Length: 117
Image (cartoon, rainbow, N blue to C red; front, side, top):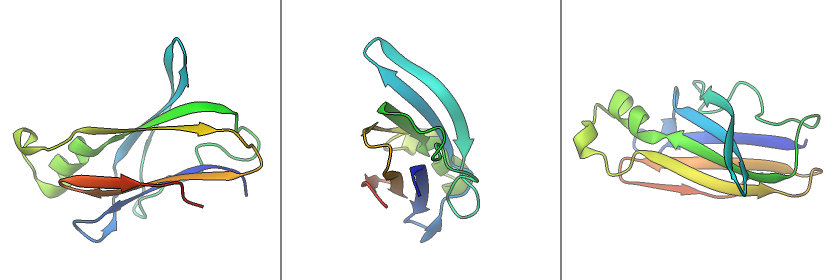
């Protein structure tokens, strides 16, 4: 399988982060262009890959996970108490024969990501 996927886990709750909004951009030297907006499903994933084997393209990309909005809605945090709001992850797709997976492990006061499989 080739393409691009993501997955968000809420470490505070110990389960997938559902209804977390994600903005996906293509990054160029002259700025960035919005490709699409998504929201995670009950499994913390998107209903379909961001890119599949037919539309994956080389280049630099950015995912912005709207964590603050999610934490306010899901954890009833006050906006004034948020430690961070939007989480931006910039990455490069270079080999179109590989699968790219960009997961986010989220808690109220920290997050982690890695290149998954």
